[in-house]
Length: 588
Image (cartoon, rainbow, N blue to C red):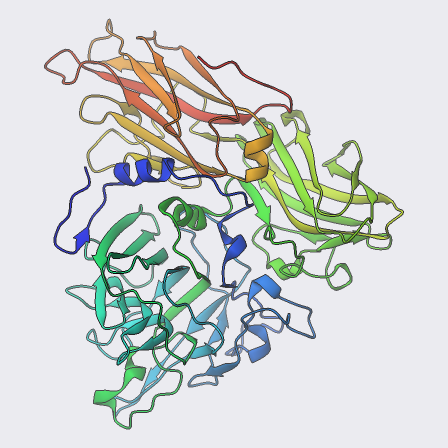
């Protein structure tokens, strides 16, 4: 149930799931496609672990229009100024944890190390983007590690200042606040918000987000945090603080002011600088939905995706400036944006677990070639060459990869230029996905968590910790909701099959219990009591699959309490597998 509590509304995650499931799908490759700026913070071409590695201005780039080694893309919101005790923030190769199971961005991150002298005067580490201003509805998603308050707990550590103008009550700042504990929080104009149900600690990685929605006088502010080795915490506030007005200063990353105008420490906003590491940071000039925030945290969904569906190749890099091989987690600017008559191959080296290598999957490429240019491309998977296809302007190419072509460990996927007439075929974006499995098919549920009110009903398939998914459904713990994301292209082209196995029921070994499986609140299949060992296979048609976030919902339908004869139903594993093109299932 959703209920007001003063100006804030803490959502249960099951209510959050219901809201997400009702949202329309987006016809896009992913949530980042239309972001206003995205800083991967991974471009350290001269990194040397023996020096301080201060970032150069040219190295802080908006990934949407990265450019070339010599020249930043003209359309990007790149840094225009850097500031700091050593000249600016530094590059670090500190190991990155991805709390929601998403992708790290490159081998490096940005280290912000503000310094406070004996007089209490602070010099922040930060960079400035004057042209980046986000009025009204807007969103931020970032991954950070916090090293503590710079000056004192009464001085927040702001990760980003979005043109806040205090007197005009416009703009916002986002970071860590000391409100009764170390909290994820923000100022919107002069109004403070903080997530008081989670305490931020030093030395731990977080996926975090804020979403502001301008509804006139009925605005909302939403805060999300997903800690390393933890699960998602969320809170929604109702307010009138969000406004379409915006200050003139532009964005500052790492501090409240870029250069402090105050002359003494006790009145210094530079004491509110962020101290810690940021792996990536993205912003939007719109409010993300709950499902889109989860998608951004978990990006890319199994198994792999690179590039933005934006009719541009600028977030990747020219073939002549890159090597032929790309490993997931490497910087995007090391990925070729084309194959040519001279640079004929681009190879992705994608690691697969023993479970992933046993599932059929789809390799999908969308080209960005201009005009009527065409050429034949083939896909070589490990040692198997798949049929060549004709690539042209803005064309989607699909190859179904059966499990017999995959191996446990590193798999190679090589896009090979066969023949013209075009001498170049460029890529907008590409993905490998469509199938996933949670748990091991071994007639055992020990990898999952024992059912408990402390375990959230919602589980995201990228979450590396299977103990965040309950092993069963039962009275009092009646729901397991599994979240996963599909691109619009896979969702509208393919059908899918969900499979699980009932392996134990109780407390009486002689009693079985009814349950149901739902997909996106659009289709539900009810199952009468099933014998232990029964394999449950649910075909899923395109009519109930969506672009963006999807849910599979397991629901307990037995007696409502243990006293009334209720019991548990335990599951061995959960699997979604893509079906060959042309498959159409009849659903009751």
